[in-house]
Length: 173
Image (tube, rainbow, N blue to C red; front, side, top):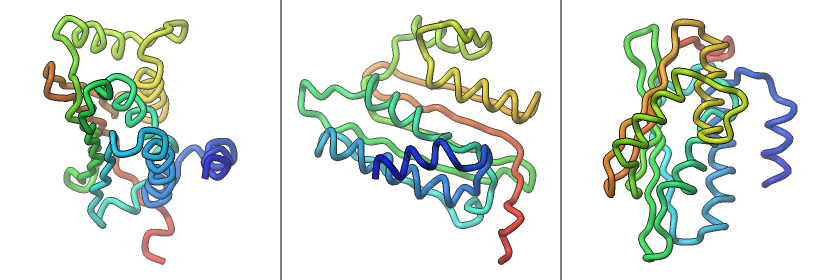
């Protein structure tokens, strides 16, 4: 499964149908679940009307990994639940959310993280996954994408992503 995921990362197009991205996200989720056992549960809730959307490959993996690394509290035996959701907003926008019920982020850290998202610094050693997702979206959809983060300490974190909805050219086949 790992080699399949690496092959996808290296050799697929930059934009892929959401349905394809979800299948590789499930492979990634399975790898994480094998690593953490019952300590992590990952659910993917994508309505059928979103599956033909073209999305950047590896869109969800950094966000799911952040949930596992920063939101999990494995020391106390608590299961981390992560949910990936999608919704179309009219005919022109698609919105995604990666939400967890983990440890959350302290208000001052959250504000700093939000600033880092706005001021992408390629030399920064922190918030790399989230910053890279935001930077990729800014390059692909200049002025038309948004990445936001909401979090409550001890309750969880939600990263929301919006960008233009473009259907796969194979959507009706």
